[in-house]
Image (cartoon, rainbow, N blue to C red; front, top):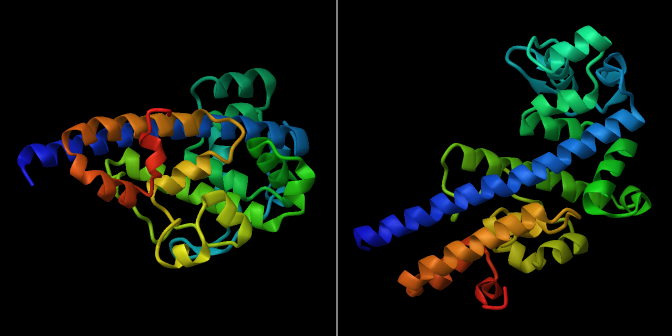
Length: 264
């Protein structure tokens, strides 16, 4: 492989990294709005109520560093610290209104903490978030545990891609054993277009194409379209120079060849 060949592949990954970050920022903005709305509506706008561990699931206990804690306690600490910030708009809401509401606090949360807030919601609130994000009747979400599990699994994979991209990691051949999506039956097979046999061979777990398919499940398509167009343009430009890499890239990224058709 020549130096130019290596450089062009490096450039492909840089562009995919930027496109991934841009796409996930759209998703993140949408999730922030939905979580803040759901918490305000179903729990409270009052920080003394919505920052109270009794209103959430506790999560699985973990050791940190020399004592055991529940994720809900870490989340409540983070939310409380945000309400105590001395920059704006937090200081304004605290001093003028005596309360920092969820739609203000959520602006300062990292994506990781936003996902924890989502995952630690009790079943009623969590179902409403999924309903709004996916554009599904809430009754369907409430009655489908597999759907709720897939949603939670996908948030973890999405965060893995966000962190990988933000820290300069490779994207085109990224694979996460830790955050791969568990196979969850027929619904999973339909959503991610992979059979159980294919999954057992490593397909449909955590490649970039899996992230793309997952983003297509949400009602707001900005994140999906942004990533889809980025992948399409980057691959088409690269394959004009090195068409022999086509199958390697498509298989490594788990991208359907139809993305390269002129009709897209």
